[in-house]
Image (tube, rainbow, N blue to C red; front, top):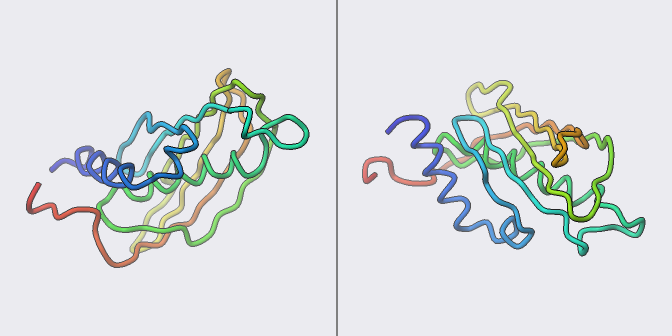
Length: 144
């Protein structure tokens, strides 16, 4: 199995159980070893009291992209820590894209950066996540 096939299979297994991302309308648009891109439309029910999408919804999109990126090696991986910087809000009707890229991966730990952009390419959030691999796999590669 190639690294790309492994990443795709892991993503399919995760996506099948990721009810939260699905309920928020997210779509997985690209996956590869150590990288993932997710998109999410900004719905009216995602707006805060100021009438903008800011904070938690943007974090959730970035965190989901991070999760898919760090789970591309067929090893169950969870967040160890993360931080986010919000640069701008997003309006209703826009589609946000979160692209996660592996910065470093050694042993059981990884570092990933996620950039969240609007449909016009404006950066609205920068996220850095640290991951930790735990026991287990997404699938048995011997049966694939």
